[in-house]
Amino acid sequence: MKEKYFRYSLVALIIFLGWLVISGLWSFVNGLLGAFTLYVLVRGQMICLTEKRKMKNVMAAILILLEVFACVLVPIYFLAWLLIGRIQDINVDVSQLLATVQHFIALVQEKTGYDVLSISNIETATGYATKALHFIIGQISGLVITTVVMIFLLYFMLISRKAMEGYVYSLLPFNENNKYMVMGEIHNMVRSNAIGIPLLAIVQGAIAIMGYWAAGVPSPFLFGVITAFATIVPLIGTGLVWFPLVVYLALTGNWVAAVGLALYCAVILINVDNVIRFILQKKLADTHPLITVFGVILGLHLFGFWGVIFGPLLMSMFFLLVNIFRKEYLDGKK
Image (cartoon, rainbow, N blue to C red; front, side, top):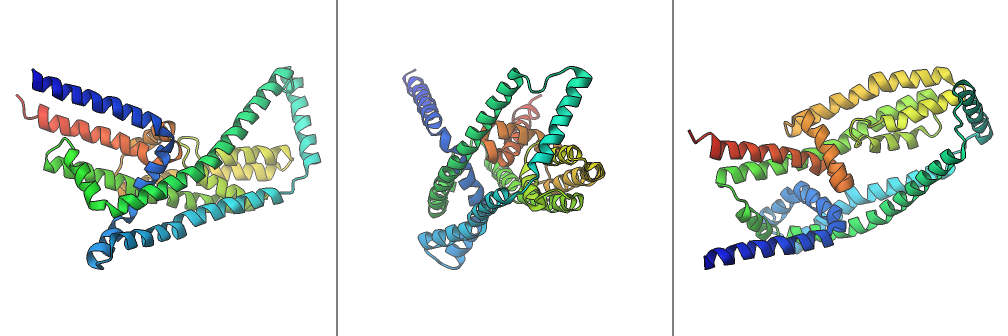
């Protein structure tokens, strides 16, 4: 009884302190997930530099961090700076657009009797705009903090690679075969999403840019880049960008371009998205499409941006653990 008391008390203390640590540091979870993703991608390089090239851990970690800066962080921040500059340079005929919008609002009120510009609607729209502005500011400041935490954690993951992996491996509550399966699944899922999602975004953005340019959309490159980022949104995806552009072209009286862009995006852009996404997932990790779709929905809700990688991982791990439980404890019992 005394031994059981000590054991259960220790488990309770671990759970309680773990909950305190996780809840207190949850704001840094994106940095942890980012560091883990990068660690999976550069782990092979770390092994090559330290074991084959006989380089010291610290020097090898610094070289890899420089690579991460050059190949990942610098392009992202450069792209953000470029987008801000492009947004400032946009020149839209505001008077014509406002006249078209006013005509559309008057037409809606005439046909349906619904007052789009009522006080309640304006207050609602203002509230949403304020929330959107606060969200954007919070995301920008959070991106800087996430980057610092991510680089900091990645450095210590690299220099403590063997000790960290051995410790985690020893804690897994499985036999050797199942441990190998779980670690392999984690590696494959993280790697496939970390490579496949940016590749899909690049292809989607390039296809969208061609369609926007042909339809005469202002700043097609800018909206193409935004479309690339929109690919991470499940179910709706690129429609968040191209559908408002179709409406914009229609409101400005360019009906031919609006219909053409709608057909181009509905027939080509959406289908290319589905085909490439499923091919990449099948090629890199042999993941069922439903796990990818619902995993992204779950991940975005739990983790934000990094949920596009770790949401499908959670779904895949759930089914893997259920399968392990079935083989270990159900199939063997009659």
